[in-house]
Structure formats: structure tokens, C-alpha cells
Image (cartoon, rainbow, N blue to C red; front, top):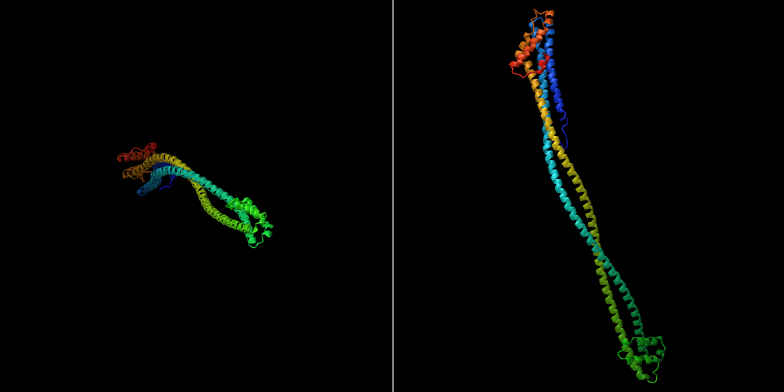
Length: 411
């Protein structure tokens, strides 16, 4: 088949070429008849026998051969032109079908692209909403981590201060107990440790089960009970031991609470870190999907535009193709008609020249060699021409051939 959107070279010009060949054939027929008619009288100057008369037929045979070759050439060219025309018609038929299929496919592709683009844009909106939610949740998780860290730092500082103070108070109580056990009350009361215990008794009432115990301890530490030392020392020793136990208990509870708070904080931070990591990964994935989806949407829009342009071009070409193919059909009809007339002209001319009756009539117009002279030949040339024309017309009527305008022109 001819390639798409191609053309048959010279198909439009074949009409003019065929007309030209027909004109040439007609003119050759005219000139051939004229040459035969005018050559015959001149050739009589050299005739001396019937052998010379037979030689006159040789130019006719040569002309007939030439016309037959021309006829074959025209037929060959017609076969080639027919093959080209059939290829072009095949192209018109197949190209039209291919274009129609391409147009239908392009229409379906456009609808498909529009559907895909709409779905992708909806997905893009959904992903952006999900991305925003993930970013908000991650920010909240990080804020919770920062807040928990700040609280933990304050709690840790409070525990450290409380522990430091508790350790100091407990150490003072233990020193007081040791001093009383050793009978070194007077020396102890002069120490800084005794002043520390006095501050504890004044500020921490919750450590005493009975307020009287607190007052007795404060009085003992101030040195106001020297007259009743022995019984009061035993009582104070019991109060101090009770204080020491309470201090140790409070310290243990504070340490346990601190350790628990640390574990809660660490668990919270671990969970929040895991949440932040998961959200960060989800955010990264969504950003990649949004980027890829954006590129895909852009590509689909470009393909949609290209397909639309191709569809428009195919529709225009299909419309032009129908018009062009119809034009070529009309041109081909003219070519076929012209070639038929050309071949008919050649066949008629060959038949006239090849007819035995026409040849005999032509021979009868020639004078004998013995009676002819140069003057007679010249004076009889017009008569010979008339006889030859009459012979041609008679042969044409005898064969029932159509009228030949070129013969009338010669006459």
C-alpha cells in the first residue's frame, strides 16, 4: 500500500499527457498519409520494374510496425498507471479506515484521560488533606514531648532539692540519736546539726504524731530542760528515732515516686518518638506520592493535549482525503477515456494501413515503369493522390470504420 498521507506522483498530470499522446497520434496519421501520397509520385522517377513497385510497400510496413510499438507502449503505460491508481485507491480505502479507527481511539483516549485526570486530582486533594493532618499530629506529638520534658525537668529539680534537704534532715536526726546514746547531749546541742533539727521541728509539723512531742523536742534542742535530763533524754531519743524513721520513709517514697515518674516520662517519650517517627515517615511517603501524582497529572494533561491535536489533525486529513480521493477518481475516468480514444485511433490507423484492399488500391494508383516518364509522373501526381484518397475512403467504408477527420483534412 501507499504510505499514509502520500500521493501518486504524476497522477494529476496523466490527463494532459494522454491528451498530448492522442494529438500526436492523430498528427502522425495525417503526416503518414500525406507522406505516402506525396512520396509515391516522386518515387516513380526511379521505377523501372515491378520489383521497384513492391519496394514501395516497405515504408508502409515500417510505419505499421512503428505504430504497433507505439500501441504496445501505450498499453504498458496504461497498465502501470492502472497499478498506481489501484494502489492509491487501496490507500484511500485503508487510510480512511485507519484514520476512522484512529479518530475513534483518540476519542476514547480523551475520555479516559479526562477520567484519569479527575481521579488523580481527587486523590491529590485527599493526599494533601492527609498530609496536613499528619503534619498537625506530628507537631502535636512534638509539642507533647517538649511539654513532658519541661515537666520532667521541673520534677527532677524538685526531687533533687527535696532529696538533698531530706538527706540533711535524716543525717541530723541520726547524729542526734548517736549523741544522746553516748551521753554527749551538751556538746551536741551546740552543733549546727541541733539547729537543723530545731528548724525541722518548727517547719515540718506533719512529721509528728503529737504536737506535744514537737514542743518537747524543740524545748530539748533549745537547752531548757537541764534539771530533768535523764527521763527527758529517753523521751527525746524516742521522738528522734520516730522522726528518723519518718524521714527515711518519706525519702524512700520520694525516691520511688521519682523513679516512677522517670519511667512514665521515658515510656511517654518512647511512645511519642515512635509516633513522630511514624508520622514523619507517613509525611515523607505522602510528599513523594503527591510529587509523583503531580508529575503524572502533568503528563496526562500533556498527552491529552497531544491526543486532542492529533484528533483534530486526523479529522481534517480524513475530510481532505475523501475530497482528494474523489478528485483522483474523476481524473482517472478522464485518463481511461483518453487512453481508450488514443488506442482506438492507433488501432484504426494500423487497420487502414494494414488492410489488403487498401494496399491494392494504393498500388493501382501507381503507373507502370515502361509508360511513365518524368513529365507524366509529375502531371499525374494530383491524380494519384486523389485515387489514393479514394482508396482509403473505400477501404474505410468496406471495413465499416468511423469517419476520420484527418483524412478529410488531407483531402
